[in-house]
Image (cartoon, rainbow, N blue to C red; front, top):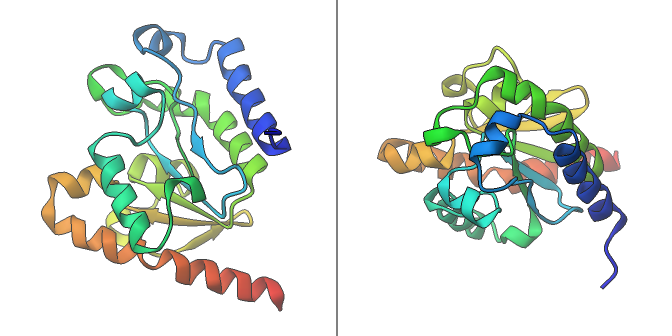
Length: 195
């Protein structure tokens, strides 16, 4: 199987993170770098905040309970993980699953932007406030979740993090409702591209 040009570019970004020793303190206490997973030609990229325990062990994003919920929601819109691309802002698990710190997010942001530049998705779905604030600073997720925003030519869709919905049952339906708008947003974007 020939590796696609996009996948080769993504592999190079991963190599660069390791070579430049980004966030060495985080790297030291993590099992491995959790770079991203999925289809390099995806129309949709999902971005979480940082790997958790299961992600750190398996080296893949969203493989724990919130990943299972994400897969269930993908099934609702007739998609599988192989159809999308999924990653996090911070690529190493923060100790004790603490929130990523600003300097950690800043250190990884250029690499995340490089991933997006390679994939060129129609929609970037940010999962949780940390992810949203990297791209849409100053907004409150409670007010803008489920509303597509265009910023610097890219469409972003801020959603609550699946983990939040697992801890808060009321958010679960909100997240599902927002999630099922994704194909409608893509369809509208495709229609506007044709005009």
